[in-house]
Image 1 (cartoon, helix red, strand yellow):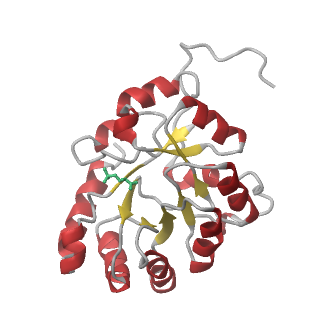
Image 2 (image 1 turned 90 degrees about the horizontal axis):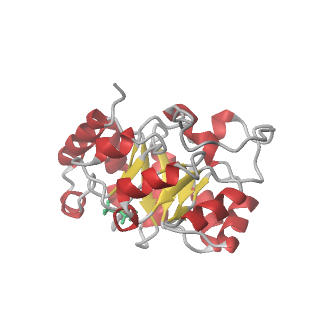
Length: 244
Ligand code: 3PG
């Protein structure tokens, strides 16, 4: 056990490689001895598209378009009734895509998205009841936080990867740098205000594991079935987020 507190000048632990993000998803009830690594969402992308699907028919071609652009994970939100069946459609038809559920804000939704085939879930925040529901099912989860106290509460519940949301309003890079001092063992997925123009800066932050954003899946492109545009946006994001 470490008895000497971390000094402000000590470096952060190096960021985890992409393929081990999944370790930080594990809710407290799960341990490596109770879940096999093959059951984890070991995706490689560091850019997670946040998607509002309004027609389930968009889901599978969208998943292929993202994969064609080098992005192997997607967050389909529950903001529209088509979200849950869209998760199910991708989970069934596109095994190479790691499909997650977003905007999971109510405890009963955790089992719903798990049953639909979501490999992981995220929330813009968290409540104790929501974390209890997550602990009751085998579903990797990323709770949303905006303040140091929320980070500490989520960490007490066993989470090491959190969604900083809304990242821009929370202070963006300045907030992430400030959190890195006292809460340097936590990794973040900033979402809200991330774009190709600031993506690289976010990903260079040692405490940023990945970023989320809606810019990859513009509503008009989804409605028009403009999959070429989405592949181009995904390719641009993949290239901007490539490790040196
Ligand atoms: C989210 O839904 O997680 C965010 O609203 C996405 O924010 P963005 O539209 O700024 O990417």
